[in-house]
Length: 198
Length: 423
Figure 1 (tube, helix red, strand yellow):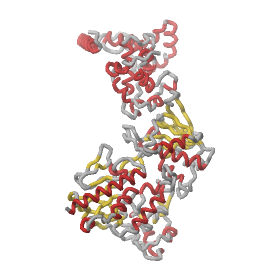
Figure 2 (cartoon, each protein chain N blue to C red; figure 1 turned 30 degrees about the vertical axis):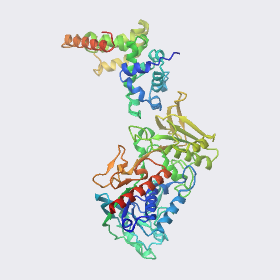
Figure 3 (tube, each protein chain N blue to C red; figure 1 turned 60 degrees about the vertical axis):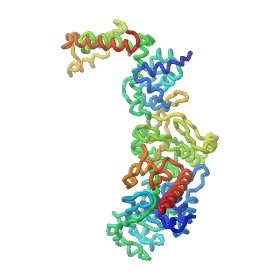
Figure 4 (cartoon, one colour; figure 1 turned 135 degrees about the horizontal axis):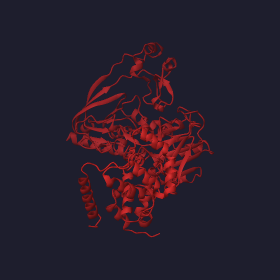
């Protein structure tokens, strides 16, 4: 375990909402409020991650899968006595880890967000639910995909009936798609500038 | 000693708790006239609701009794109960205070014999015990209530029963037709000592007070521990009256939290440690658990903490619990959170959970200073200035000894204004 004493400052300056971490008083309310904690989904609670950032545990924090487990329920934000936007800080850390190339590409939330969801939405400018679901189910191979698809078939049929799921995977691009692409291009430019990759 | 003319000045002290009483006797004993105004029917304030003081664990009645004696022996102090200051105009050295004297419906002939309460059929929630028991509608709150006269609420005074009680009183003290009066008083300085109230625990939703029967507050627990309290000093579960043998205290319940009171009330850590001694004294087999963010035994009180820490029956868990659930079978409150020293999440059931709620200054809500240029800090405590001085828990969260010190200081500053006013 190595301690990188510049890591806290790095996070405060570069990770979204990361500067709030210095305000944490380690009371533990976020940890007790997180629904994922009692499911055993994470190793370190938000409070522990914040303390690890401050202690300089760079590798442990950035390669952790903990922040990828956040369901954005906002319980922690509502209850935090010091007004820390914990959900956003956690998302910020996850993104920072990804940008830094430290996040496990196979971690399912990371993989879903970075590859499946992103590719899906960029391709047409809108979410194609059927294609998105297929890709998610089949990410671990054909056998696994069929198994998961069968498990969820009743839900899918229900959603189809209720018109909550578009059956056709390809609905074409949104109106003004070139504009959408241009916006993304600009956003990437700005982001790369900010992260010193310009 | 002030000269004759300066000593003719009057100092208005608003609030008759330990702070107001202290300022009143200190100022009067050096020769100034004091008008002491109390909103409720009796003096004594929050201190009168306590079972014991920390750190000496002695009875609060002792300190109150000394101050009552000093008041009784001092002709310079004029007392008003059931009175409210409605407006203060003028400037330092020359204020005019308009004071509303609300009716007591019992005059000063009352000898507190209690015949009226015996005859009275109507009962009301006892505010002295936070409504945990009932009391007769014509009443005397507790044995340390001073002045020792009965009183009744306006609603009851208007009833037919109140009229009948007139005949019961052997000395003709009951006057259901008594009316409010308004007077104006010239005063040179004003000491604001309207104290505090327990923060409304129902606002702390995740802890379930008001929803879960066996979640109570530290002030209610204080009344419960008192042998003159609603349970005769037994520490019991409100749900079934069974003795509470496994009790958790939760610190900072509604304090140091931007959702509730953002500041630290300074007294609650010590109060819970004190209450832990009640539990352990009454039943050596009982267990106490204290949940805390960090322990704040202010000033010279660390010794008290060490004393409680030496008791193996008291367990300490560094954690601000996330929420309290109720076990529907047992009625046990279940405290949920993360132990921040071990990182282990817990769900612990208790017989009773006591929320250590903080102090909300009355000056922020029900007792604002009715003076055009009165100033408050960001939390609603009164900031001294001109001829207005805040005292005790109107100035900041204080324990009893801190309140007494602050009030003695206020007496001096009020005297200085009086002397300068005389010019």
